Image (cartoon, rainbow, N blue to C red; front, side):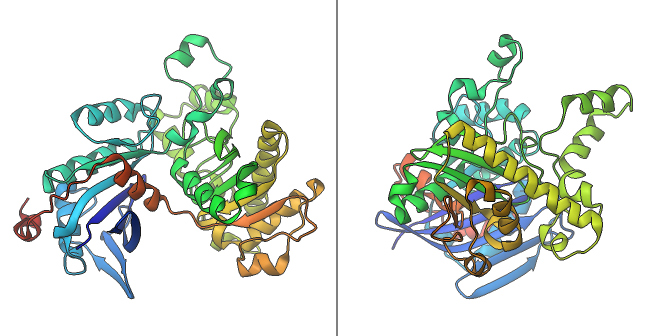
Length: 407
């Protein structure tokens, strides 16, 4: 019987879980699940085969993570044989300059990830808590870590610099980039479908509630819109994107805003939500005729088109533009608005193909080829897990499955 790889993709308020069957050297995704820690009560969504289940958890978001995950695994156990788990992989947002590839998790790696929490305070502590919880529940199951920042370690050193004193750069204040697992997933898929184009100059637009763009040459990252933190770059659902540092100084010195209030403002009250005053969800705004909603969408697409042009200057032109993630994959009006703003570069949208969500959404006459590709971060994590761990299956016992809630 083949083994089962579980993956955990931890966000600032969510955890996405993937289950992959090991079939020789291949991986088949057999289930996906998710927990929204912002929901009350906690909700566990599971897709397994033809089953689509939404299960309310008894645990609360503020409860001990071991207790929460114990209940999650209890809910999973009727739908899959958890005794077949051979390894568990995690997405870690920040690897800093310490990690440029996936690693097996041990005490030393946990300590290093913990040290980097200062650079990603909304994500890193949650990932660490989950790693430790899984360690307590499954002490004999090996775990691996895949880092979002690692994909961007190929960026030239000059691109990683801010115009700040050199000592600050040496202290770690530099451009790291994020969404690396998504970019790796997309360029891998694109290389299978368009091998010649994938080796050229490509820009990928990862457009979701968090959003960024990446310039690739020969399949490697050379620049990206996010930098030191996940706040930078284009506007997002609730995050500000690029902002004049003078605005922050003004808020701190003239408006006397506290550090905590400023953090909440920049991460949770800006972006599409801040501009529209009603929602950070493109699906709601795109069909809303109110002027603030229209303005939010216009600003969003304007900044994306502008960032594409900046990245094109880094690449010296580009051959392909790829849309991915929730908005990029499912919002034809957003894709069309961005491509129209690039018409001066020769981008010509194929309205029918775009509306249908086809692979290629530009006309044959377009000087820029634009595409849609689904991202699969969990698959990259699972592949990394298999690669980095020389897995010798040590499955959990049936008694452990029964005892989850007693941990």
